Length: 435
Image (cartoon, rainbow, N blue to C red; front, side, top):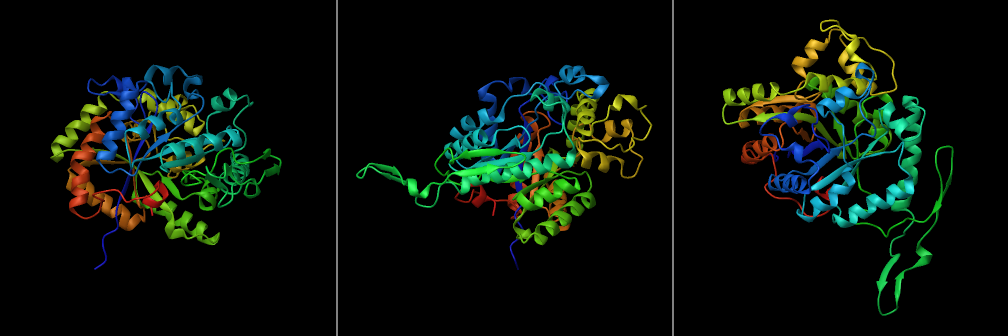
C-alpha cells in the first residue's frame, strides 16, 4: 500500500493589528497589539517551527482599505489591514531564530522596481539560507495606486501584462545574469568572480527598461520559490505560467476543487508538470479537545469580531462600497478592476447578503472554517486533499497566538499520528522541502 499523501501547512498572516478575523486585537488574550515589537514575530516563528510548518506566508497590501463608506475611517477604527508593516524587514530576524521554517513574502509586480526588488529578495534568500518564497501580486487597492503616484489601479488584465514583463526582468536578473561557475571566491588567485561568466540583462519594452547585471551573486535558490493567488481567468493563466505554489480560497470543497483542476489543466497546456504544482487552501481553524469546547471558543472570538472591519476589507477587495446595501439585499456583480474572482464567487448564486456574510465570514473571510476536535478536523483535511487535489492549507491567524498554538499542540500531533504530516523537516531549500 502506498504511503498516504503528506499534508503541508503554512501559517497565513499579515503585519497588521488584525487579519481576516478583524477586531480581535481587542480580545483580552490576543497578543497582536505587540505586532510592532520584534519579540512578537520571533515567538511566532519559533512556534511555527516547533509545529513543523512549512512556511509563514505574509500577505501584504499597499494603501489602506478606503472604499467602505467612502473612506478609510472604518479600517483605522478596527485595525483592518491598516496600518501595516513591511514584511521583508521582519523576515531576516525570524530566520535568525529558526533553521527550517520558510518565509513567503508578498511583493507587488505593479509597483516594485525590478532591480531593487531582485536585490532585496536575493539578499533575503542568502540570509535565510534558501528559505524564501515570493507571493506575486498586482495589487487591488486604488489607494495603493495613488500612494505610488498613479492615478488609479488600472485595468485588471493590463496589470497582469505588466506582471509578465516584471517576471521576465527579475527572473533574468536572478537566473541568467550570473552563469554557473561565475563565483570563484579564490583567495590564492585573488579572483572573486569571473567577469566572462556574468552578462548584462538588457530590456527595452513597453513596461520595463533595464540595462544591468544581476545585483547579487546567486543565492541558494537563485530564484525564490514562486507563489501566486490569482483567481480570475487572467490570474489563473498567470499562475499556470509562473507559480510553483498556488493559494486557493473558498469555503466549500467543490469551489476549491474546480480552481485546482482548471489551473493544473492550464499549466499542462503550457508544457509544465502540473502535478508538481503545490496548492494550498485557505483555512481558519479552531481546534480543541472536545467539540463543545471548540464551539465555545468560536463564540468567544465572535463576540469580539468586527463586522465593520470585515466590510471595510471586503469593500476594498471587491471595489464596491458595501455600505450601500441593506442587510438582507443580495449583493450584485459589478465589473471592477479590484479582486474580480472574489466578487464572482460571492455573487455566483445571486443570494449572498451582508447579514449572511457577517454570519459566515466574520472570523474566516473566504477561507474554509474548521471548528472541532483534532480528529474531526484531520478528517476534513484528508477529504480536501483527496477530493480537492490540494496539497495543504494556509492556516490563518484568528487570535494571536492562541489559535495557532492549538493547531501546533493538538492538530499537528493528530496528523502525525495518522502518518499525514512530517515529524521533521526535509533537508534543503524551501523549494526542495516542498517537493
